[in-house]
Image (cartoon, rainbow, N blue to C red):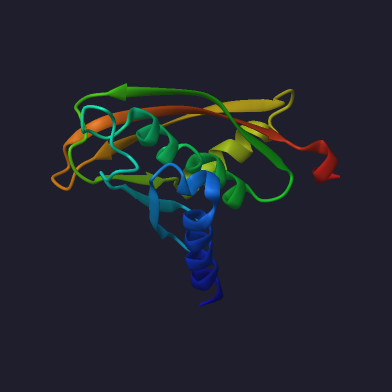
Length: 157
């Protein structure tokens, strides 16, 4: 129950945070374990570009923070997580509300920890892909993120 309440408060906080609010995106769901996040990006006066479709900057910005946040929440203290690289591929113009679903599995979290525990491994880069789709599941953009993960020796001690 407490985890569910924290997840709902996290969703609310994201939607009120000025930097995220400015993207036009809205977080619609955060799983209590932070292994799934859902976002919607409506087409409205704040997200519409000059030609009447969803602004590409809004598409990317609405998706930007989630893999880092999900890893930070799942790995816990003792890890440093940063965005390292991103790429967006626009496939078709957004003429309606678009949706994205981020997921990270327990196996992925375990694999990151295991790789960082190997002798001589100071950091790892992980690659994640998320699609921005319409209500029919048609892909309008694909974002590929490279996330840097390392142990934080100052916290691990």
